[in-house]
Image 1 (cartoon, rainbow, N blue to C red):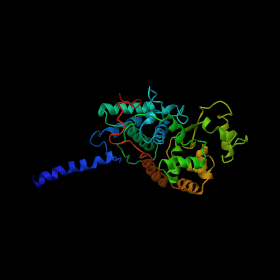
Image 2 (cartoon, rainbow, N blue to C red):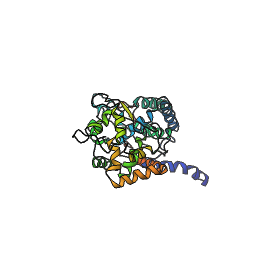
Image 3 (cartoon, rainbow, N blue to C red):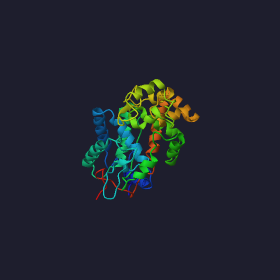
Image 4 (cartoon, rainbow, N blue to C red):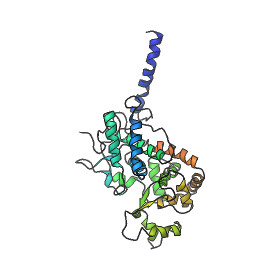
Length: 328
């Protein structure tokens, strides 16, 4: 073999040497460069159109990725509907009547399947849609490691138990993060996603009327703000009434979330405790409130870290043709 022929073969050799890493569980951004190079742009286009039609959709898609990764890892399990063998995570307490954006994922999957049949996983679509939603609302970008495969099942109990809840204690939420390999810095940075989106009255009502079971409101909530919240979140009824988590810029990804916490205007208890119950998280809240660039940088790092929670790779799982059900 001539020297020139050897040189021509080197790029292929490098590709072949690189690909087996995914079988060992390593994700990398270039995973679809050869098998479906148009996937990234297709996903971005559908997400962009969806957010243009409904500004809330950015937060909804970002949330789907969170809720997927905290249950069984980032494997698309949240997308599965009920079937004969599967009990959907969509009916769990954290997801019921609040998780949304499934139709957008369906639209993405349909478009990607036409371009590259049985190639791009639903789990990877969720990860890319979360990144694109963040960018579209003014937040940071990052190279999304890819190569996840889709689960063959769901876990309703895991969804109920593993996803941090608005009324969980500081230590409970931190433990849930640590069990997923995330640390206290990730906890503060990822909570910053609440700079966009809404929360339902039912998720913070207790703070307004009966925070500790003694019939008193939560005094770590600025009281004039609490009064305004009570106007549309009564003691009974109005469970689904929506409230912006960052009223000043509800559809802009910025560091306003942290400024709200410092003003005792964090809507959810699980947010405000970052400023009121731990010195390290308080210091991080102050820093991110003052330095948006540092928040953006850490958010991107923490999203990559979260997206790598026990992914299925290699021959594990499958590439679903339809995200709502396993292949038959």
